Amino acid sequence: MLLTHGPISPVDGLFESGVRCDRNRTYSGILPLNHDYFVFDSDEGKYVSRTKRLEAWLPKITEAGLSGDPRKLELVVVRAIRVLKSDLPEVSKQLGSLLSEHAANPGALRRGRTSPPPVDSDEGLSLVRAEDVDDAPTPVMPKRVSNCVDQFITERREAKRLLAEGFLPPGSLLLTGSPGTGKTMLSRWVAQQLGLPFITLDLATSISSFLGKTGFNLRRSLDYARSHPCVLLLDEFDAIAKRRDDDTEIGELKRIVNVLLKELEDWPLNSVLIAATNHPELLDRAVERRFDLTLELPLPEEKEREKILRFAAGRFAEELPPSMLPAIASSLDGASGSDCNSLVTAAVRRHLSGGVEFTRCLIDAFRAQSANKLGGKNLGELIRGLQAGNGTQYKVRELAELFGRSPSTIQHHLKKGEKSNGK
Image (tube, rainbow, N blue to C red; front, top):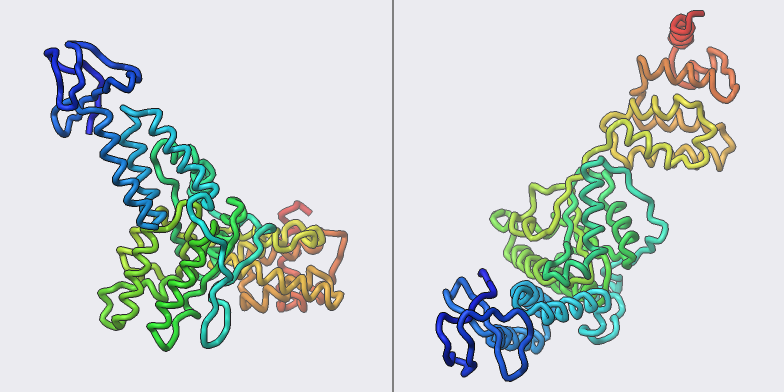
C-alpha cells in the first residue's frame, strides 16, 4: 500500500465525511478537529480520510486487547505502527513507545504474579530447572557463528528501537550440532548477556509413558516460562518436535508438535525461546521454520580447541611448557569442546587432590581419553617442549614412561630437535 500526501481533489466540494477540501491544496500538518486530513491509498485508488484509517485500527486493537492474548495484541500493534507511520506519525510514535515499554516491563499489560515452577503431579519433581548464569563463560565459537549470535543479542537489546518502528525483535533461536559442541553453554551465555533468568526444560526426560500427561506437562512448563521475562531452553528438542509425516510416531506426539507451532507463533516479546537438538534431520520442517534464527554449532577447529584447553586449565596453564597445549589441541582432531574441557578438568582434579605434577596429569588424561593419538610431529614438539619448559629436565626413561613410548623413540625425537636447531 502506497500512501502519498497530495492534492485532495481536482475540484472543490464536500466529501463523504462532509469535510470541505480546497482544490490543489496539500495538507502537511495536523488540522483542527473540525477538519480532516487525506492521503492517497494506492490499493483503493483514491484519497482516504486519515480519521477513517485510524478508526479502522481501533476495533482491531480493542478486540486483541479484550481477547486476553498479549501476543495477539502485540502483533496487531506492530502492524498498526507500520501502517500508520506515514500518515499518522505521532500516533505511530506513541504506539511504538507503549509497545517498547511493555516489552521492557510486561507487568504493565500482563498482570498477575509469577507462579511457582510447575511440578509433576505424580512424582512431585519440578518440570523446569532455573540456573544462575551470572558467571556464564563466553563460549568459543567460529567467527561466522559468533557474528550471528552477536547480531541476535544486539537486536534484542535494541528491541525498543525496533518496536518503535514497527519491527519485531528476534525471539527464538534453534541450535543444532553434535553432542558437546556448546549448545547449552551458548544458551546460558545469551541469557547472561540479555540479563534474563535462565530456565531449562529437558524434553527427553519429560516424555511420560502417559502421553496425554506429556502434553499437559509441556503446556504447564511453557505457561510458566511465558509468565515472566526469561530465556527458556528446550533441550533435546527432537524428542517431541519430530516430523508429523513419520509413521512411527503416534497421534499424541503429533498433536504436541501442533502445540509447539502455536507456542512459537505466540511467544511473548519480552522472552527468548531457544531449542537445542543433536538431530535436526528429525525435526518437523514447519517447526524449524518458525524460529527466527537457526545456527549449526560445528566441532571446534585446532585454534578453538587450544582456546578451550587454555580456558579450562585457568591459572594452571602457566605451569605447562609453551608447546604443550598447542600440541595436544592439534592431536584432538574431531574432539568436541566438551571433550577438551573434560580432559583438562580431569587433570586439574588429579593435580589438586593428589599433588601430582600438572604436566604429568594432563598427559595421562590425554592418553586415557584419546587412546594414544599423540604421535609424529606433535609428539616430538611436546617432548622437546617438556625438556625446554619450566627448567624441568626429564630423563629419557621418564619421558618414555610418561608418553608410553620406547626410550629409542624418545631419543629420536630429542635428536631431531637438536639437528633442527643446528647443534
